[in-house]
Every structure is written in structure tokens, then in C-alpha cells.
Image 1 (tube, rainbow, N blue to C red):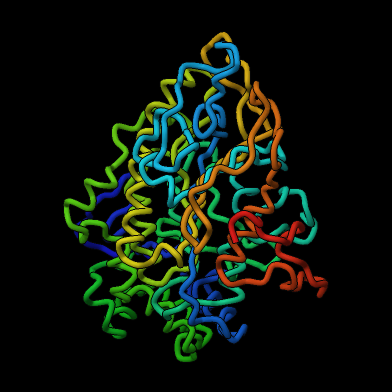
Image 2 (cartoon, rainbow, N blue to C red):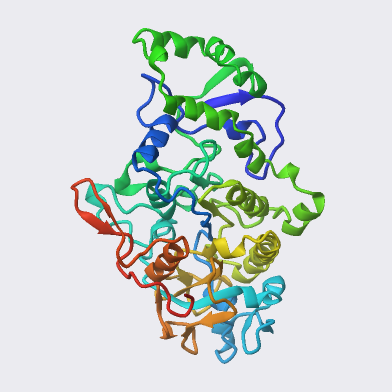
Length: 451
């Protein structure tokens, strides 16, 4: 990892104006295995035929399993021990109601889609299925299925040499699967997403070297005394290729630095999104980082194709209703701000927004006022991407136990995202390590209601 010195401006999870420049996997020459330079090299090898595409996706993962019956489909006809404490509210689309914790989203329902009948949840307590559409165990022996961001990295590559095609913002969580960045799977580590504060790499501090001085190649090499000695022994430094220089280009790119610096936004915009504080019910999960959602908008505007993040900790085995009031209100503010912000900038049709978790929660409220795991059915919120919005798709039965109307498989949602990104999911394949072509999803038709 490469750490730049400088005066930090802190964000919600400790990422700062300078410390975001910790490039997970930036290693040069003989140090490290897969690095940013090799990622750029691999992307270039694919030809980047679609590099000009302006389409992107923001995947907001609600780690822990959000309660479907307390968000987008209040079960008014169910007994109280199942219906819970919330009432439905009208939206700006006649005939569609959602939970009372989401008044801002209700006011822009014409720009949204709620899916009330998501099925196919594996039951695993992690982000993998929301990032890929697949059960983690599928083709696990050859590396597993790649996430959307890694597929875009392989197929499209970067729009700009200084902007990674896929960025993962998820704050580190004690339950690590809730902050998964989106695995490259069988595509290999060269297509992993960029993490502004990636972990697991050697922490190389450039003593006395600031961001300004990094522009000077000689100053950089002088600051890397130990690294320089190790690579000089093999002559690697002299043979540094254009892709390693491009890796340094990411370090010196004002575009990436600016995109991650939300202090550049007007105060009015930052207040519109909110900061998600104080953090409540976090425990071993993610904070309610509203500023990550603003940062995601800045990243796609700068040219990032895929942004993933983890918002809150929705594993509400106890005190479910107060948790939804807290997390729901913050999510309502940030996501409504994101949709309107993208619309005002003329970007909404090019950016697909997904908001969902790994499964739903039990219809019956437990003795601790909580809801437990319920993979039989879940829910999702979608926006943008040129979709036909202003819809509520599917429904559960009276007690919220199962999908009674129009079951929507998780793969259909991922397939729809690929369709919105300009990928023909009916015919597109990528080769696995054995050379066998693999479709991106098994259910290859996008949701007919939306396209």
C-alpha cells in the first residue's frame, strides 16, 4: 500500500483527502503479485472496445437483510404481530404506497421502482449475491463468479487512465462479508475493484514526499529508498513500463482525488445528502455513510463505471422498528438526494441505482421486537438506467411470507443492470480459466417491466 503524507480531511469511515491515496495493491517491480499496474495492463489487453460508454452502476448494499414488510410493502391486512408498527404512505404515483419511514422517496416515486417479490436468495449473510447475482458456491472451484464491477473492468476498461473502472467504498466491517467490494472471481485479481483504503498490503510511507512532489519522478524515487534498492537489484526500475507509469498516474490524477473529496461540493448539496450521523445499530456492520452515496455520484461523474458501498447494519433480530426508523430515514434522505442530483445533472438515464440486501426478514415479530432471517423473499429499490420507473413490481401474500405475484429472481435484477449498462446479457459470455464461455447470469432476460 502506498501512503501519501498531508493534512487530512476525514470522511465518515476514516478515509481522508490524503489517506484515500493508499492504493490497495500498488506495488512495483519485484514487490507484490497483482498490482495496479497489472490491472491496467490486463484492461488494455482487452482492447477496451467499449471504453467510450457513459453507463455506470451504483450498487448500495443493505448488509444484514432489510425487512421487506417494513419498507416497500406494509402488510396492512396482517395481524399486528406480523404487520408491525409502521403504516403505509401515499407516493406521487397513484395507487403505490410505501413505508412511512421513506417520505422523500415517496415524493419521487415516479423516478423509482420498488420490487416487492425478490426470490432466489441463497441465505448467506454477505454481499456476494447482490454483487454478482450468483450463489457464492457456483463455480467456486475455478474462482467463483465475478461481480458487476469486475465484468465492466474486463469488458470496458477505464474511461480515463487516471480513473479506475470499478471502485469499492464500503467501510471495513467487523463482519467482513458485509463490506465485500465485489469479487473478480474467475477473472482474476487484475480485475478487482479499487479500494480507496484497501487493506492487506504492505504500508509503504513516502517519507517527506507530498502529493505535489509525487509529480516529480525523481523525487518519488528518492523517497522510495528501500523499494528502490530492492528493485534496482534486478534492474526492474529501469524497465518500468507504461502501465506502471499509469499506476502512478492514478496517484497524481486530480480527477480521482477530486471525486473522492466531497468537501468540494457546495454546503447545500452536502446537507441535502446528510452525513448519516449519529451512527446507531452499527455493531459489526457498516455505518450509515450518507456521504459515501454523495461520493458515489462524484465518482460516476468522474468516469467510474461501478461503485459499490455498504449502508448500515440491517440484521434486526431485536428492536427492528427503531432500527428501521433510524436507518430508513437516513437512507431516504441520501438516496432521494442521489436520484434528484443525477437528474439535475442529466445523468440519471446513464446511472443504474440498486438498493438491496441479501435476504428479507421473518413475517412474525419475535419476543425481542425483532425480525429474523427470511431468505424466502426479499425486496429491492431501483432507479435510473433509462428504466420505465414509477412502478411497484410483485407482491407477497397477506402475511409477507412468500412472493405471491411476479417473483423476481436476484439474477433478473443483475441482468437488468447489465442491460442498462449496454451489455447484451442474452448473448454475452466471458471465458473462465478453463476456456469455457460463461454467461454473466443464468436468467438472461432483463426485467420485462423495466426495459
